Amino acid sequence: MLSAIDIANLFVTYIWKLHGLPKSTVSDRGPTFNAKFICHLYKRLDIKPTYSTAYHPQTDGQTERIQREAEIFIQMFGNHCQSDWVALLPLAEFALNNLKQTSTGKSPFQICYGYNPRFLVGQKSDKVVPNADKHAEFLEKGYDKVKAALSLSQERMKYFYDQRHKDKDEIQVGDKAWLSHQNISTDRPSMKLSHKKLGPYLVIKRIGSHTYKLQLPHTMRIHPVFHINLLTKFHPDPHGRNPPQPASIITKEGEEEYEVEKILDSKWKGRGKTRKLWYLIKWKGYDEGSNSWEPIDNVANAKEAKEEFHKEYPDAVGA
Image (tube, rainbow, N blue to C red; front, side, top):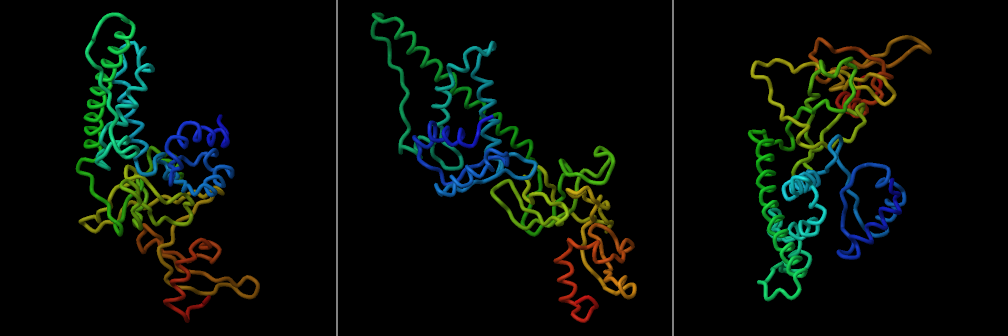
């Protein structure tokens, strides 16, 4: 496994010496890129680290698209025996860098150097050096091959993208969205038989073109930014029925917790040393029949709900 210093040296050797220092980088949340060495080095070099979203390795989908396109690209220009793709990789890289990008309207070469480098092979002049002619033909045919493969891979990527996003409701800030239960632990014994979606949760921010920040309960203790593939826009039931009651969230300590939607009332219970403050709780995702009185210890994570309640009812007990 490469160390943080190894990564930094690779950056210098292959990237920074050619293009200078980046303004930001995209990486996962692994130990290498979260290491103190990298974090402090980035700070000294004024590089902003951008990390992947929860349960989706790519922050805004850009990395995923590039990796998937590169994979399809290589599959298409390599021969059946997969024996020539390594030799064609430099030509493939050149073709990619010479291709105009939809997002910028320019090729990477144009952005970096201000022009597209040429790659033309002239006609044969003589047969004095046959090996030179043979190599020139390899370059010409190889470049034509990778350009054709690049065009086909783009068409396939567009098809896959259109299929995934066909008729998908656009999510806006202020909407509510269901969150896929993928990689989130609940108290249900079988994930296959559990509700496939959690929430709905309020969308509070859009980050990039494919990721959103949700207002999650404090008990979930996970990164609140998710890729759109994990979200589904919430539509109220036309018949006024409540959505399925959510399962409790399992905290890192292995305890069950439910989200407090609102505190309705407060009272004292007990006498002397046993006297304790209790709150009447409206649980998020549950109807009024599930409201319950809970001791203050059970709502320790509902700080905002407690503050809102006492602000609205300053004379209530416990203020």
